[in-house]
Length: 241
Image (cartoon, rainbow, N blue to C red; front, side, top):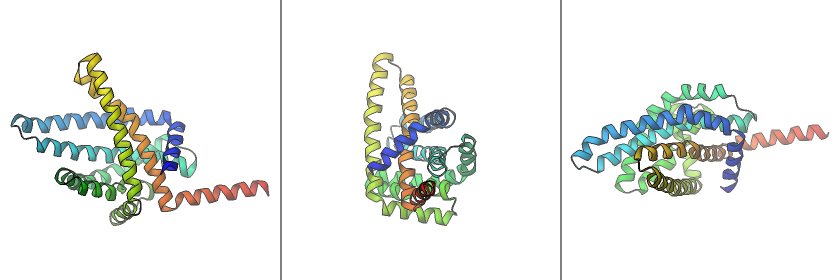
């Protein structure tokens, strides 16, 4: 677990400029759209004092947004780990290539996961762990619909505690930092709009670290990381022979 987090920091450091580029061109627009949609859809329910439905829609749209935002960062991590170099154009090509598939499959996944969260919490966590691997399977291996679901569930099942640990760790850090930034923004500016922008920028910078960590864990699980290490070892042997 900790080795994946450590490797993720290395990936982040090597690709910091690309992370910023993807954040500005993809993450921020998606977050802005998410904020507008959630506020627009939730407004009538707040007006009639129905608090459950706004929470449900926020959860659904948040998960759908995250699934889409995973794509370019997964592509970046996979390129870096597998080929030792990253082509910026491919990040956008992969996003366009896989966005529609991930978007369609994220709709039922987000709905059922959100229902699980709102009802008993635990079922939502279990569903999220089993289905979180969907974008990773699709982007890294480009499998069919059936195999994407099968491998995602298998990945979640065999790495259940590790993924749960990742989610809790990053969620805790996100909660603490977001709360602190929100408090400071309100104290110094007194404007919620500034607070929302601060949170979006933080998410833009922080989410890639989680995605890098999960990508590394997935490549370790499916065996590609071992193949890469073996190839590197053989190249070193050839150099000294």
